[in-house]
Image (cartoon, rainbow, N blue to C red; front, side, top):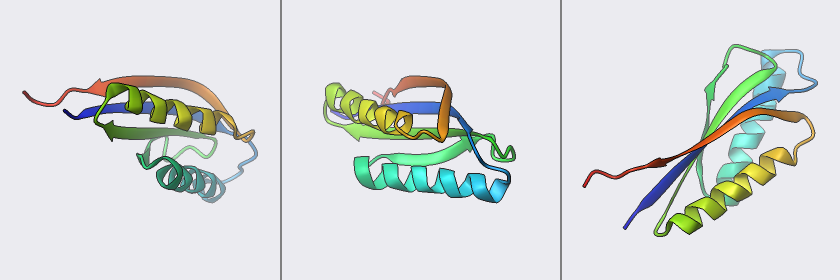
Length: 98
């Protein structure tokens, strides 16, 4: 059986003075999470604000525990970046059609 979960994180990005600088930080975060944790990742909100971003991550696995472990690791990785302030976060499960 397939299990899928999502994680969204609303972020304030310190030290950016332009959309270009913000996008550099967000692009690095998204690409590094994709390669490190094998998740789908994208900026999903606040695209036009230069100090804010909402980033979404999705993980799929054969057990719910593995999905939780992967999303926990992504969350810890995002929190480890001093230039990022996590303002809010949320998780949800994607239920497959029966």
